[in-house]
Amino acid sequence: MTRPSPPDRDQLLDQQRLAVVLAPGLLTLVEDLGRTTGAAIGLPTAGAMDRAALRLANRLVGNPESAAGLEVVLGGLELRAVSELVVAVTGAVVEVRVDGRAVDSHRPIWVGSGQHLWLGRPASGLRVMVAIAGGIAGDELCGSVSSSPTARLGRPPLVAGEELISAGLADGRGWQTSDVTAAVAGGGSCVVSVLPGPRDDWFADISELSRAVWRVSTDCDRVGIRLQGPGLTRRSMAPVVTGAQLPSEAQLPSEAQLSSEAQLPSEAVVRGSVQVPPDGQPLIFLNDHPVTGGYPVIGVVDEQGCDRLAQVRPGDQVRCVWLPRPGWAR
Amino acid sequence: MTRQVVPGTSTLATSVTDPAAVGQVTVRLLPLGATGVLIDGGDQPTRRRLVAAIEAAAIAEVVEVVPAAVTVALRVAEPSQVAGLVERLRSVIVPTLQAPGVASTRVSSATPASPAAPVVVCPVVYDGPDVAEVCAAWSITRAELVAWHTGQQWTCDFTGFLPGFGYLVADHPRWVARRATPRTRIPAGAVGLASDYCGIYPSASPGGWQVIGRTDLALFDPARTPAALLGAGTRVRFEQAR
Image (cartoon, rainbow over all chains, first blue to last red; front, side, top):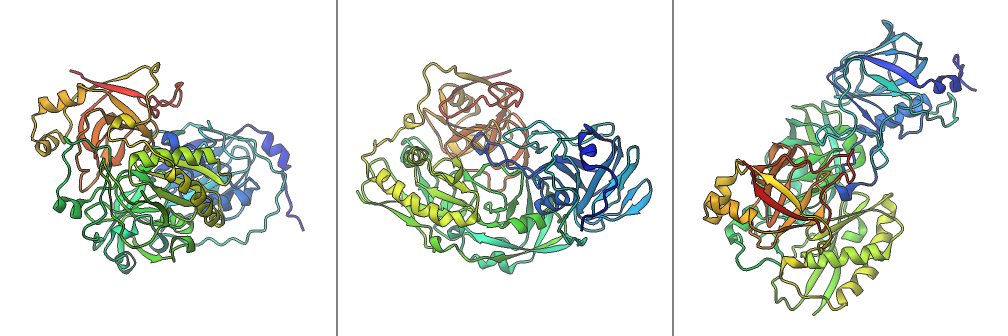
């Protein structure tokens, strides 16, 4: 049985202008599901930090899952619709109001032309996703309109007065949705699953990662999260890789220097990489990670774990659980 | 010379190569998340040959290739495709290693620069926070550091890390360790050293490189063609700005 649909869907999507930003909140960015190419020229994956939340919000408004929406840190966003909108709010649980009237998050919401959409501030969790039927238009770079503010890529954080334009994405599915959604508060403390490698063999005891209760430091943004805890011990006599091309006048490190500060030539890192500098405090790279890094990566947090990490705040606890090695790597 | 491909294991493998290496060289295949494989060639010449062979093989399920100093990372779309990729890689890599290679001990084996390409000139103010530490590590004066940096040609070996970033190798390289604790934020324009590379930060970023100076040169501009000034093979010269 189809849902009743007051506005005609095609009428909505023909409107080019969607809304005007009245208040941008703390930090609001336009994000889609990121790019799948561009690493060779140093472009980060970028895209929504809580990918599952964006996918859900897009399904709820009938968009393709990869359509660009808004990533709102700690809520506080206020928009005035300039055409009829269908909106969904997911991610961290917040109060949502249309012209002051309370509405549900994690549902499709109709916002009439001229009406105000207001988001409160989440009690827990960090990032709220807002999808608008039609998607949000932007300039594409390697197939994505996403923003990486540290790298100054994509649209800068929204400011009051800016307009949101429709990307015109209609996939003809109408208002039917099969999702059963419940607003589940994220953040606080979380457990993430970690795949071993590529450089787990640089560490004396990988169970140090899973035994510790890690605390999220204040270094916590779209690039990554630095964890505080007992520290990860390197294996002594860690592998040395010296290039055959080093000429004799290069000053090579001493043996003692090598075992405590062994250097890894820069190599590719991915979203979720748990990178460990010599001080032993792990850094988990997230969406705006640099394409390569020179400290060993003990393991990689899986996709669901990275989505959970999108909702943690400084001071929250993180625990890690090791997944088994893939069969080909045993 | 025996070469073999081994799957990544948790046992330690030391691989110290020297210019006259004769014996076993191991290429390791390591897991990189659910959809990635990191191929560790152990040294730069092996990496270059691996990258060439993999690109020539045009493996259909590979969606991205990320070369770096001594490794190349491959990514597929679905985790279920990784095991098949590993099998395919064995058949590509083993013949590559068995083919006679050029024994090379100089950085001139870096991706050759196109003779027609212009040299990128980068003006630098040498007042970085790590000048003293680098000079102490090499027992040289600041003036000697500037002379070493500006007095020779640099070549971009590969790109990545950040948009516009290139890993530059020198004709007369020197080696310095990365910082034990990376900085949370290195400003855009910073000129840094790590191992035997020089790099210029096109935008602010966390990093562990030793910062020796800063430049105003815009290495990356999405509105410009080309967006990135540095590509593999681009030649660079530094000059001291006032």
